[in-house]
Length: 315
Image 1 (spheres, rainbow, N blue to C red):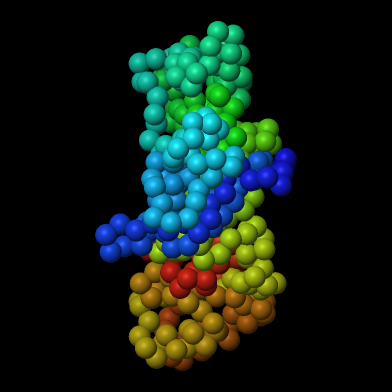
Image 2 (image 1 turned 30 degrees about the vertical axis):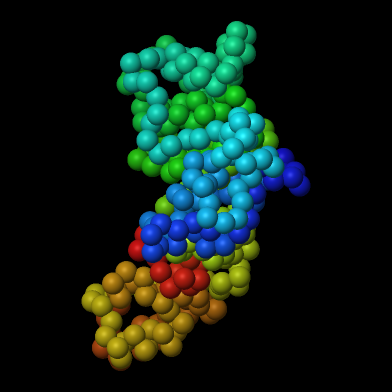
């Protein structure tokens, strides 16, 4: 991984409001060359607004957004250093894979041999060299998404912005997309991406940033964030048959558990081991609660987000 000290994206004290709603509240973050930073949070958290500001497509009320040290809203060199991958497939369905890349290379200002070289490299990176002459409509959803990513990188941008890059694809296709993004990262490209998939962020990103109500509530490496909340503890998950009443909630909270979905699913750190589970089940039954399932698992980003914010990522 080729991370350098100079950021390819730097956002400082960004503020942006829409009518009475504050979409961004003093947001600051950086992305280095050769680094993947994933933005995580529920709908309405401010992720899209932040991405639009980074792309120069939205003016901030206050603060700054800089790509390679320049303002993407004003400076063509900053925009030249950008690649943007939308959530929807932004390709021509009646063209082949090669023809699509040829068109996008020319739209990005490449000429002559540059176009041929960029298209050849793009087909190789995407693993689609053997499907180069197939129409887009004959490619699988995962292949189309890989081509969509490559189309945004033909001019070798310093920063790649991606909105939900694996939405709607199966596990194998997702792994192929992850491999492509890691290859681009290892070639020195910085990336900022949004996702609702915490498992994806865990396996893909070098750092993650949790957003909620226009604020970054936590940022760092996945292992550091998990340790900051759970330490060496496991995550205890209790699934109930029905929502907990006030008395039952008090019992659950005595185990440092927090509710996830409609008071039926509760989660929290457990410093002990499996030997504590029978006692927990007994106390729950004494309070009139029947646990459909009690389990321990290695903690992840879902648990971190819940305990930092009191909310689930998709709430």
